[in-house]
Length: 487
Image 1 (tube, rainbow, N blue to C red):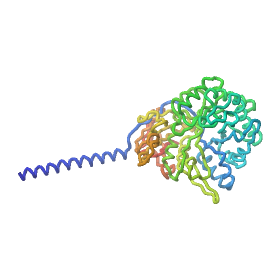
Image 2: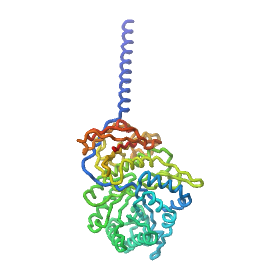
Image 3: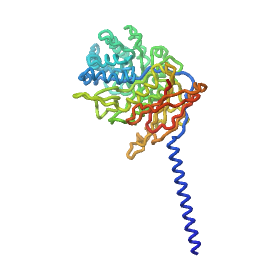
Image 4: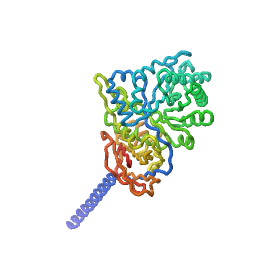
């Protein structure tokens, strides 16, 4: 009996030893897999698509007052960071037609002139490298529509509103020498006191083109409809404009914003093969933001890369530099304060700096497809884990960017239902192989690799070799932005 009990005890010990050993081995194996990264392949399809015209930022009407109070040397520093160092090109200027023309026949441009011209915002931006000015009308004068929120502009006022915009642009040129290169019609029109109906859009665009041409402003492009999301409403508006051949000919570019729903294949299909540009005229994040916030930065980079895969030509962040607001600093790339002057560079800036060093103005993008998430589209619902885009630069070099939008903050306790359903997945490391079809027969290409993450600012990681169009990044970690470029 003792022998039997001894045998039984040792049998149990052996079994437990075996189980523990398996767990340890499996655990080690799992750790090694995670360390190496989950493997995926992104294929950069052959064929040139859209030409990148550059990054941009908005300036709001309220920003000029604080800006006027800082020394020119401090202004130069802020402008250098955005326009020179990060190579932003487009300045989007907010304009309130309701303030400009509160009554029929009465026009007063003092608010705009004080905020953007007298403050030096426009001249400083142009002096440091900005090349395009985009006007962003934000309100239809209330007298042009019914006295209820959400009503549509009177049909009889459509031409008058078009004339108001064209006349303002003409005055800026004649009186102040400010040349507007493109204009919107109404920023985020679905969320305004007075709106423009779907059937009114073609009429509005035709009138605006006519009024601009009548003032010898043929070079001013019309960009519309600037909806807050690239959703079904945007599709309907753009289709309605496209169905009117004269309105379509009058429109230089379609436009949407990139917040929770960025550019998609459904919208890019509407312009593929046409001469239309695609302006993403506002992307942003709201709320407070601490230094080193890689979550907001990865969100911004992922949306940019998504949009580059969907024919966007011009890409504009909401606010470049502006005075600090602890409740809403996330809208900014750089915040500053006065008395004394000081500034903070938020993490998003470094991600855009890195992207601007990867994709030059004039880069021609290709379409990228992932083995994990296909189109990698940023739209309603959970967001892509990995987003990749690639382009050939004017100097012949190739740029590739990979953004990892996974984080354990998305599964943290007390996380809101919105975050759980509309943000990213839990933190994950990926081993990403990018295959550029056009380089399949080229042999070896040395590529420089850079990385940004929380307080990691466009750091050089060394060189890696692309062989016959294939290059592998073994670890793309949570919230990483990894970029590669040869030459």
